[in-house]
Amino acid sequence: MARAALAAEPTIKVAAISGSLRKASRTRGLIRCAIELSNESIPGMQIEHVDIEPLPFLNTDLEIAGKYPPPVEAFRRKIREADSIFFASPEYNYSLSAPLKNAIDWASRPPNVWADKPAAIVSVSSDSGGKQSQYHLRQIGVFLDLHFINKPELFIVVQQPPKKFDSDGNLIDPQTKEQLKQVLVSLQAFTHRLRHDS
Image 1 (cartoon, one colour):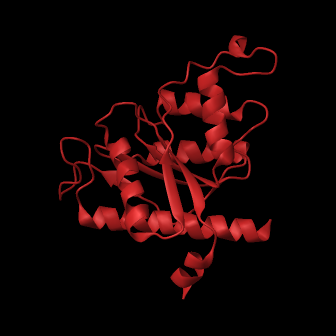
Image 2 (cartoon, helix red, strand yellow):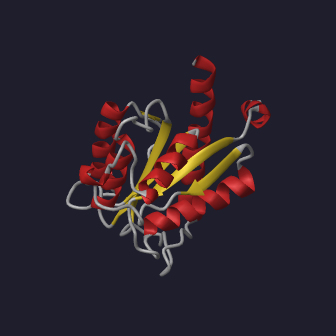
Image 3 (cartoon, helix red, strand yellow):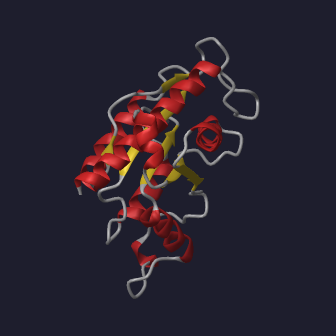
């Protein structure tokens, strides 16, 4: 019944952001898998990978006459047009990556285009699964008025068997794929709930 109700709702547009710039990174692999899952088995969800690599380092000297550099304007437009946000984050030094923080900061410049967006986070690291990066991102989200789903959580530990990714960063473990799917389904339901409450 719940799935049928979701299918009857309008399609939601999700902006997916990888905290890693490396092409074969596992976080990019998670986004590729999320797009595949939404296309194959989650009706009513459209996910687009929004690349943060073109963004310059945050520098307010680049803000001229109320305008931002073209890559920043394009990025902010993608976030503004999205119904919800999907973050895939690595963990660097117990926190999120510099490129991801840079992207978050650019989109938070006035007007803050993150505000009131539903969001979900998944993370991957060799040993901890990226717990610290997720918690730091949630703290940042409080100030930005991002609304994160609380459950399910997904922390992917690369060193734990079975093998989760291939050499190109593609997610290959069926159980982890199912867990990722459940995160996406939860984000979809939460997005519709916030729509109805607003």
